[in-house]
Image (tube, rainbow, N blue to C red; front, side, top):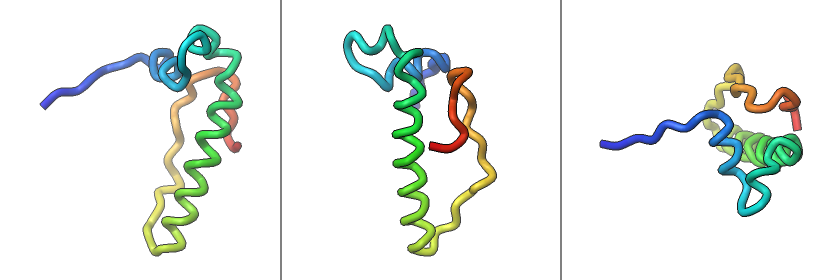
Length: 70
């Protein structure tokens, strides 16, 4: 068994490639909106198939400007 531990900042930086990694703080809000739109679309599709979705889960804030909704 193995696992990796990363800080929230490292997680955020890994969402970007190349030179964008060092600018992650300015790019983060738009990226997280995109990721949340994808998540909500997948959850909606799964709910339509009869899966139960935990809608009470709150994601940790990575950046002070993290949007709640996309």
